[in-house]
Image (tube, rainbow, N blue to C red; front, side):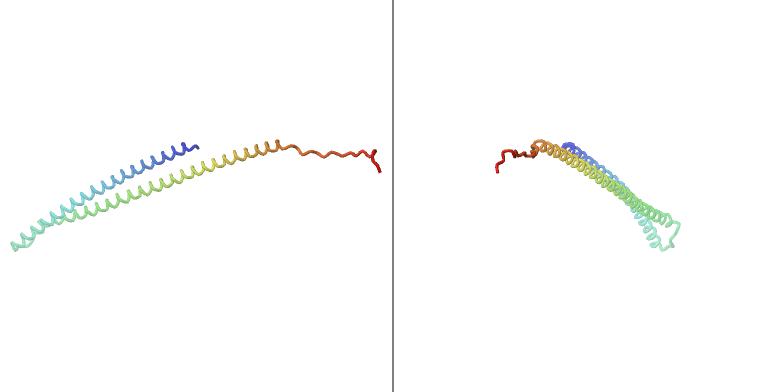
Length: 173
């Protein structure tokens, strides 16, 4: 794989990472918006409770001023409104926890997938580098073998020592 191919691949990986960051930001924004809507609903329920408490206080003060016995039928609707608002607030708080847990779970799964992608990509890169090194080593070995053959062909053969004949006929004693 050439340098430019590796560069293009890496640039693509960076673009994918940037896209992932943007998608993550969108998901976090959606989660925050959901939690925000739920908190507004909680505030609305708290306002209902305050109004009910105020009305209960007004009724109690009226009965106290008039020195009359409280009429529970007048108090019960406001007490029920307070109980309903408290139950609704508890349900909404549970919903916030659920939304946050789901967002955290999704983020964890995405992070694990991203880590696995990086591991896979790194393994592919390492495999490619090992393959390149192996190819280069093989080419170097072939070239060394060719150079050895060329060197062997350029070396003259060793002279053979022939049998030396000595003419003994003209040998003087």
